Image 1 (cartoon, one colour):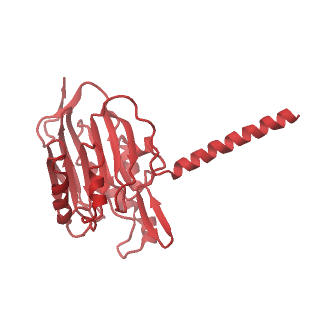
Image 2 (cartoon, helix red, strand yellow; image 1 turned 45 degrees about the vertical axis):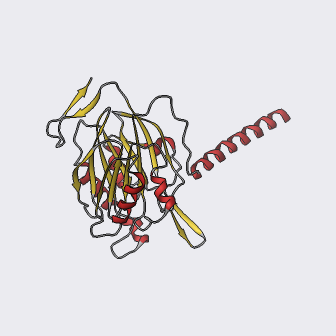
Image 3 (tube, one colour; image 1 turned 90 degrees about the vertical axis):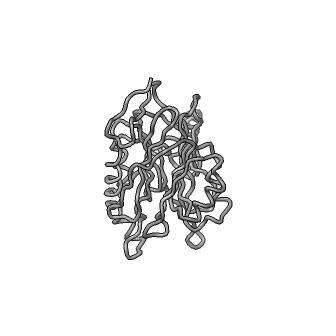
Length: 293
């Protein structure tokens, strides 16, 4: 009888320990599983730098703190463009920035090791910010990337409480419009500030279109946004790298505890799934794609 009780107690302790470990994992900022062996053909970073922080060295340095091949930026402006060109041109010879537009936080930027073109500018539908479709000419083939900054969870009159409840359909309409810019047959990556988790309307729309969430695979508990409220800090999971699962597999993904922005950089390492990859002919998408031997 005592042996039975001891066995039962041991089982309960093991179960409780496993539950605690899962709980701690959910609270961990950067909990990436070990990367699988193999070369990553494409490493992508997304980072909302905060338009007001171009003077901050820690945030500037965070942009170049990894081996990312392409960095998709949100909330850039003229000050940020100047700082990034001065600080990161050696590593990223190809850069393009968009003006903020009607909101100070509305700028976009892309910096890349490889040449690229901004092929489409997608206006917002019920939100505040534009999106870019960028065609990046990587050594393995062309990849189309959507750099997005979706509507924050705030109403037009400034209510965050009601905004959390009612703005989901706005982001769904935005991402639906932006997804129309993608050309079928070309490998795709969608990254940026979604202002919602993978459970949100926009993220679910992208996932239903065949995309996979890199953080969802490797760091399901990582938070990418923080905001102080009195003695507390509110944390959310707003920033994502999503990829076309038919073309890429994800080797690793993580949120980095770097920079002073309210957002954290998110990095995903991708690898082509097959030896024959896609390379576009032209940039308008009208000629489709051909397999590169």
